[in-house]
Image (cartoon, rainbow, N blue to C red; front, side, top):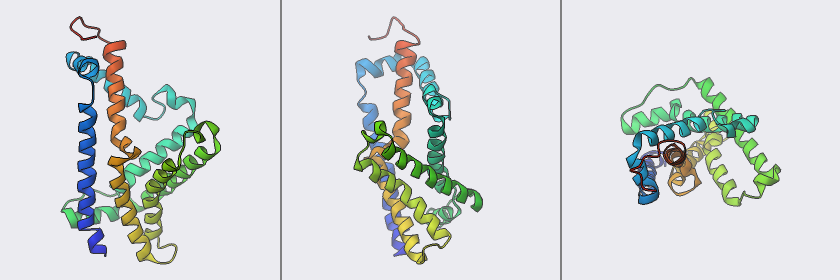
Length: 226
């Protein structure tokens, strides 16, 4: 079973993941209105790209925007959660061994102790996010079972991976297989669920930045279509 879930199933997962993301990006860009968006963006591209980079940069850096400064504790835990999700699996030694074995290449790994700290911090931050959704009425009212399911899909690979690496909870093989399968499930879910925001964030923030940089706060050239 190990050979299947780290071989053909892993290849299929990556193909769906990459292909699905590419399709979502294509349809997002294709869906922009020619008159309201892409004409203006093409005409004043320098101002547009500057606005896009400023918008993305302000939101991708902790406390870079006013929105992050309003709730500092949430901001810190939000970034701990997301940094852990992205960095830990990309630089975990065990993952890189599989990458080298199946695809023929790899890059330097994180020290094991640092990977453990990031995993535990990410899991604690994830628990905080769940409690916050339950405890705060203004967040609870916009939260559905779907949101909790996505959080479970996101957290499961890290929890099962930690259990497997440290051989906790008894059956090592069970936790290892659960880790691999939940990780593949998370990758498969990204293009088709709200988890697409891992890429969609850059598209939407870039579009908003371009819109502000050109139409509202930047160059209002005479050759623009209004």
